[in-house]
Length: 281
Image (cartoon, rainbow, N blue to C red; front, side):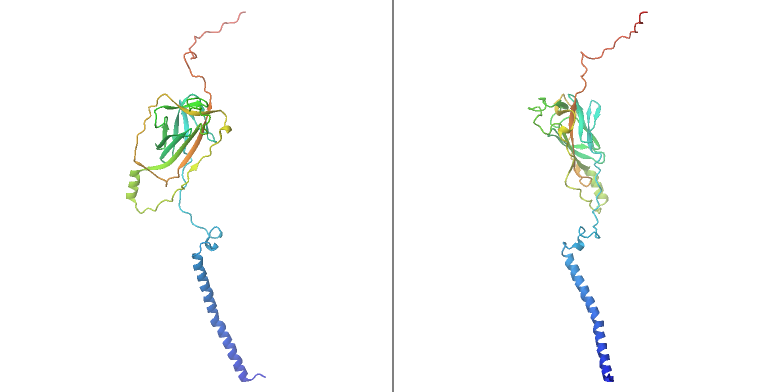
C-alpha cells in the first residue's frame, strides 16, 4: 500500500535524481570541452599530429608562397657559320660544317643574364653580359675565332679529342642579373615592398644525349685566324635570383662535310654563250 508519506519520499527521490542529471550535464560538457582544449594544445605542440598535417589530411591545404615561374623557354643558342644559322634539334644536337669558323648566338629574351660558356669541357668565358642577345666568337683569353675540327685533328688537343668525353659539348649557363641603379631606384620608391619568394637553389639542366645517338661525325672546337671582338669589365650588374633560377643548357656539335671551298683552281669562270649547232639534214 502506498501511503502519503511514501508518495512524498518517492517524489523527493525523483526530484533529487533529476537534479543530479540536470546539474551533471554541464560538468561533462565542460569536461569534454576542457579535454578538447587540452587536446588542441597538445596538437599544436605536436606537428606530427595528423589533424594539422596536410599530407595526412586531404581536407587541410596549405597556402603556397607566391612565386612566378621563371621564363626560361627562350634561353638558348644558335651557331652562326658565315651567315648560316644552325639550331639544335629536340635532342640538343647542332649540325655544323667541318673546317668552318663559327660564332655562338646567345639568346636570353626574358631578362638579362650573366652567361658562362664551356666548350669541349674548357671554360671559355665567365660572366658575359647577355642583354637579351649577344654574340661570342672567341675565348676570353685569346683573340682567335672558333673553328669546327673533326675528331683526330691535332688542332683539338694532343690526342685529337679522341679521349675527351666532352668533345663537341657546349655548355651555357644563364644567371639572371639586374642593374644596380634599377634596384636602388626601386628601393627608393617603395621600401615596404614584401620580399619576393626565393627561387629554387638547384640549377635546372638539360640532358646531354650520347654521341652515338646522333648521325654525323664527332667534332670539336679549335682556334683559327684572329678575332676583333673585345671584352670590357663592368660592375654595374648584380645577381637577381628572384627573376629566375640559374639555368644551364647543353648542346653537342655534330659535323658534316661541307662543299669544297672555292679556290683559284675550281672557281667558276663565266663561259661565252654559244647557240647550239643545228642538226645536219
